[in-house]
Length: 503
Image 1 (cartoon, helix red, strand yellow):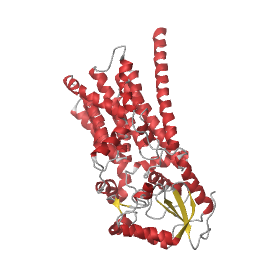
Image 2 (cartoon, one colour):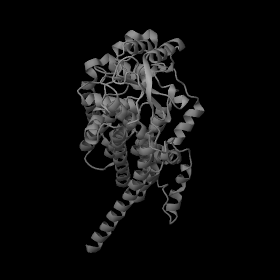
Image 3 (cartoon, rainbow, N blue to C red):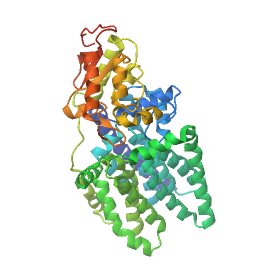
Image 4 (cartoon, one colour):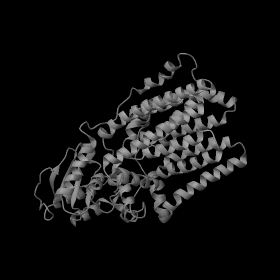
C-alpha cells in the first residue's frame, strides 16, 4: 500500500513539475511579447468595447462592435481587476492563454492516461512564438482560446455525460459568443460528445442542452438590436473585398504553429485504423482538429490569426488519435521521436518594438491627461483615449475600422459608425479636444480611417484628402511620439495652438 502511495506521489510530482515547466516556458515568451509585441490595428477596439460595457453601454445598441457580444463583458471584468491600460488588457489575455494551456495538457493526459502526451500537447503549443504572441495581445485570442480549451476538456474528461455536456454547452457557447469563427470547431466537438452518448435519445438530449444554453447565453445580448447584430457579425464580414493570395494565407497559417500543423497532418494517417476499430469518438475529435485549423482560413480575406483558437484543439486531437490507434511511440526512443515536431519551430518571429510597445501609448495618454482640455479624442488608436480617461468622437469606437464609404452615411449613423465626411464636419466644428494621428511608419498612416468599411478598400481620394485638410486647417501638432502625433485646435483650447513639452 505504501509503495502504491509512493508511486502515486511520484507521478503527481512529475506531472506538477512538467506542467510547471511548460507554463514557465509560456510565461517567459508571453511576457516578452506583452512588452514588445507591435500593437495590432484591432487591439484598440477590443479595449474600447470593454470600457464602454463597463460604463453600462451595450454592443450594437450604443456603439459599433463588429464581433460577437460576449467578449466585451468578459474583458470588462478584466479591466476592473487589472486596470484599463493596454498593458493590463494584454496581461488579462495572456493569463487566459495560460489557463487554456493547462486545461489542454490536463485533458489530454486524462484521456490518454499518458503524462508525456499531455505535456507534449501543451509544450508544442506554448513553444510556438506566433501563437503565444497572439495570446499576449489585447484581442480575442487569449480569452476565447481559454473557453475553447475548457470545452475541449469537458469532451475529453471521463465522467458523467450530463455534467460534461453542461460544461461544453456553457464554455462552447461563450467561445462562440466571443468569436463566431469558433462555431465550426465547437460543433465538431459536440459531435464527439454526442457519439459518446451511446443512444440517439441521449444524443438528442445532449444536443438540445447545448443549443438551449447557446441561445440563452447569446440571445439576450443580440435581441435588443437583432438587425445590427446580424449586420455586424455576418453582413459586415461577408462584404469585405479584401483578398489575400493563397500563398500569403498559407504562410500566415503555417506561421501560427508549425509544430501543431505537422503533428496534426501526421495523425491523419491514423484515420483508417481508427475507423476499422470503430473509434468514432477519436475520428470526430480528429475532424474537430482539422476544422479548427482549416475552416477559419477558407475566406480569401482571412488572416493567420483566425486559427489561434483551433491550434490547441488540433494538438489534442492529434495526440489522442495517435495514442488511441497505437501509433504513438512506445520504445525507449519515444521521447526523441516525440521531439521531431519541434524542428518545425524554426519560423518567422513576430514583429517587436524593443523599447516597449505599451510605453508610447502610456506617454500619449499622459499628455492628453495633463496638457489637453476636456473633450473627446479623435483617433484610430482608441486605446490612448481609454488610458487617458477620454471619450471618443461619436462613431469611432471601432478605431481604424470605423469609417464606411461616403454613400453609406445613413447606414453608418444607424450602426454607430462614421464616414470621412462626418469626421471632417466634426473637426470643423471643433468637436475633438485633440486629434491623435498615426504618422510613422508609412504603412501605419493608412489606418487613419483610410479604409472604407465593410469592403476594406481605400476611401475615395477626394474624401480622404478633405478629411486630412480639415485637420490641417483647424488643428496644429503640439507633440509627437515615435509613431503618433497629438494635435489641438488652432484657435481655442488650453494650449491656444502653442506647442507644449513632452510630459
